Length: 357
Image (cartoon, rainbow, N blue to C red; front, side, top):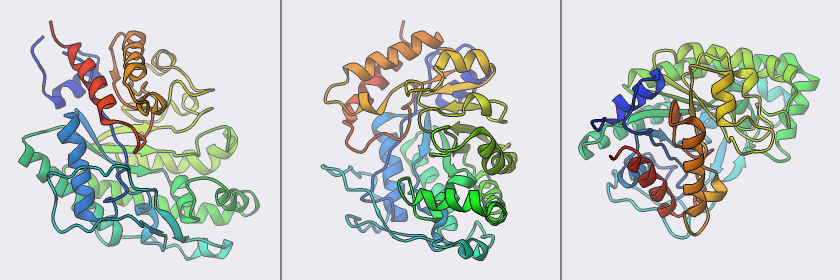
């Protein structure tokens, strides 16, 4: 088959049409630069420059969702940037994760102080500027992948407001949900309203779609099915409705996830960790949720090893399991900063070889 361009390849795989080879996507954090607008743009372009991706998932700093409500993190190894660096290289060793300075919500009454935000101002407005700069950088590079912005679902954003990516602070939100559900519902509606407006603004920039992530929350390890239906699903669907003009990748994090129960969501692609305990396999999702693309199959553990052998074996197994149909080669989640680039390059080279006679 004639070699396809990235957009044609992704659109064809999602329609079930013949493709020259599966599409490729990789993403991860560069903590040294992501707090700077120009640095963040430089980081995003690095992923495309080194890996020639079909889908460029813009890896946001996770705190952006809550900064305009008062969330503050420190980036102790942040590098100053003036202008986009088209030759940016990630540091070795990689910079450490940012640390919480001030949560936006410390007590139950703080939830009532949240107010809807305008997507063109503050940290959200900076994101729109970054996305436009990334598009301009890709044009300068002569590359045209599908570009998708990362947005957490409302319950995940509520968790960020108490300052958690996990751990003990997560218990604050759980306690408030179970003791004062009406208060949390009010806050979730404010968050939902804000990010409905934000995703609409994102799509108006010409960005192709949204990577909509549940982080920890759509897992039976954290919530029951009834709790997720009450505090997750109804707000997810409101934000998803605002995304319908773009490509939607729905990412369900963690083991023992609720992916099959959320399979009726109006999305184009499901992304998750098929090899994690309690999660469905690639073929199980394809059989149960037909008509949707599947994205993943390459574990962070394999990608972090010193040689690419296991990452390649996982890519080959994922291709064989799906027969290469409806499958986008991608990591199970954000690639660890310590993962050697050569492992991702090896997987990318293998997938490209599938399109050669």
